[in-house]
Image (cartoon, rainbow, N blue to C red; front, side, top):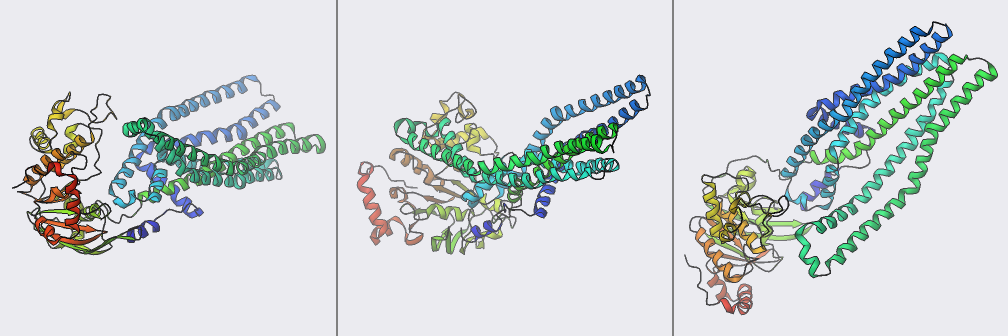
Length: 618
């Protein structure tokens, strides 16, 4: 999208990370953990200390003491007391670990979830509209949302697992070295199994995940269409279900092909990882120890027992260390999407600060504005001015650029070149939210939310005498009689998303509720984007009569594909392929006998039935 697209591409996170980037991402996740859940960080540390400490104690000290006491014939009582005390300590620590797993993690993961998703929703609220229209950005956002709190928790545990594991391995290494200098060579086996084969396996698994992500999006979309009411009627009155089924089948087939693509490589890598991690070291140590005991006689039975026990401990510690490292590296790549999303530098941030615009509307001017979408110029050298209390209309065929102009006006996009001026000042100089508050807008592609009718009209704003204001706005939009007939009136829940008794209005009725949002908002300029697209001619007439009354005290701009609705506008701007080709009043443009007149005459032939309807006069 012109410069914006280039900016986003520059910020695209890489999926091939260096060790430095992986560690940096791990630290980023660790800081998130400290920020939102110190308990996870602290308890995870102690859990690893207990886990590895138990191995070191049991195989490095406990077994050694038991064997030495037996050799020294110290008697049953001291050995029994030592075992029982150890048992009590281990049971206490086991109780604590169960508390961590079953109480701390479930509770704190939810807290971490809330904190991370609050950041993500804030970022999603702050990024420019074009991000939502970029499939690549959307895919990264989806991947960032995919179990973010679980990945952060996994990294925290992996960090502590690595650090404490390395310390534990060093202690066991020292104890083994005291018994046999050569036995420590067997440590190379789990290193090869985990670090080499395990590392490659994790990389392949992530590649598979990446290739399947777009297909998963299709599968989720089809599943959503199957249980939401949005497409229910169409599926029953058409053959669209066949196409949805085809989409689902194609996405599934692609996922299967991706799985097959990586299946053999993953299986072989996993085979060699297990072989080097377990088989080689376990069998090798037993053979080596047996040789020294039975052939060379250079090791005692007690030393053989302790050395074997230490080697088992070392094996499991190293396995856990490298599992932690691989877990850290794997999730560091996933966290790269989260970090890339949270650190994305918005082109038009919603918290963009600047001057406070005057609520007294004087002029709005487009001056030589051009705009490109995906390198295709959709608005070309556009210039026009709207003055205080004027009623203006943008008209033209579909694709003329009318809605894009509204989005530029509201600074949802920025022009590729040229400038937009509000009261003689470039709109980029204003505080973005305060600037947008100058306008009350109804978009053609409005959204009805799973909230009450009242909330759907107020849209989070507060007013004095709210109920009266909402009812007044609904009356002016021509939908109050329908709302009043509902069980709870303006407090009725809309849609059945959260309430099985929720109201499901017709397209025209829903559109009128959306129009009521613009009526209720006290803004100097009001914008209506195809406010009557779902209405019949009579309902449209009544709505535009009320819109025109609104124009007595406000500056108005609306888009309409029905030219009969713009007869009484002060200005009509005729657009074609992003260019302004005609400008004037309805009468002036009819006399000019250009594109506007031709379009009007064609539409008039289709609306002869309403030609006698009284024209809206103020």
